[in-house]
Image (cartoon, rainbow, N blue to C red):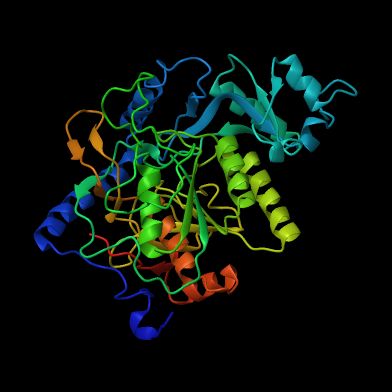
Length: 464
């Protein structure tokens, strides 16, 4: 990757197409900036924010029992974003589960005994690699406030316990700052030149559009059980509209292919088409992807947690992946979105030390107000007004005021740290040429422009 001080912050200057229609770009830019302002403001509007969450929850009421749809509760916040948790679930480490309750408990009683006395029962964690590493407990009627209070009580006694966090694709899905239809990059093809050695990149997300596009983009991505249903809510048969986060995984995968046309992209569905997924599902998908040979794992999702406690299942997944790396003598890079929360609180999994966390900046590499940031952020790319592959269908904002129509082989413009992260994943895949991925990451970060709280800022794909 040729680099000198003249292209600081733009390591691939000239490699990616710009925009052919300046008028269209300006109109889109106006819309993007307006929606970015709305997203930044949302953290100060608890009534609106919680109204959106209530509408999101209501969409799940009509689903069939036992269909795997996650029901959620939330811990309300006056400012910032409300903490989402999987309804009726508590997670512990095995060491804490079998430990003595300690001060305040009956002599000889264990945490297991205490939780059983309160009506919690042990439930399978969903994948073999987490059994024996994470204990999952459920309760049919305990509220989110009660579960979070119980988790805090256990932590005060020195035990590793937490609610099971929802790891969404965004704080309130794409109800704010959603995609806008656009044309593909001029002269772009899905099989352009790429200097590196092909690298396998896993996308843990909503899945991928089930149909094969006529324009060839994403044609080599296996579908299998990783397809995005696009219209699964509010009833089992949908309502004829794209769901609240339909197309998110397709958009992310398209960004990676633009940055690294030769990348071997594999998509894993761990989040539903309304943007809701639990940390256990995400953790299991991460491990599965690495066992399938992923060298880079992209996670365009994340959560803030009660008391900023690291999510137990995601920590366990990272431990398993580290063991796989050691056993197989290979290297895995985990890239995650820093979050659209607009503050310095950690967003997980991005805030884990071994994860490359990616925030968002604007086209001048200046901070955007809606991006999470802080000392835990590794780097940033332009997350405002990015263009990528989308899905066919029609969607409207929850108030019905904005309607968009997407045709076959759709492209869209969208904003969020969800679309910053895959640029870094794609850039690393592009630079992979037999060298260690960590070395490629160091080289990439060395070309960045330092921005306090945002790490090394880079422009990779051309935004609006």
